Amino acid sequence: MRQQPTIARNEIGPLLDQLIRLLDDEGRATQRAYFARIRRSLHHAQDELTLAPPIIALSTSTAVGIELPQDAQPLHSRIVEKTAQVIRDLDHMAPTTRH
Image (cartoon, rainbow, N blue to C red; front, side, top):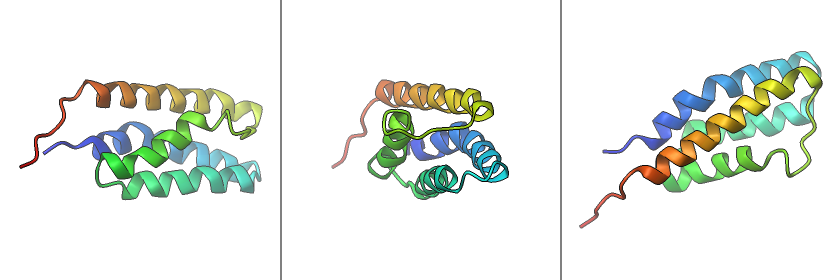
């Protein structure tokens, strides 16, 4: 049994938690809510299909205009890097055979 959602949670979850705390400390409610929603979605992912939405949201967060405070940008960059790594890892895993 493959564990892609678990791998993604372990790789990205702690960084997201840090970002959410930082945004909360800075009073950035909108950005905090955006990333908290992604975190919940990541937490509840059970397979590749349910893992896709949080991964896509993280990959495109800069493109959709999410503005972050200066001190959150390095952490966000690290999250985007980790997300790209998870995507690469998922791409390299062999598909499961279903009968």
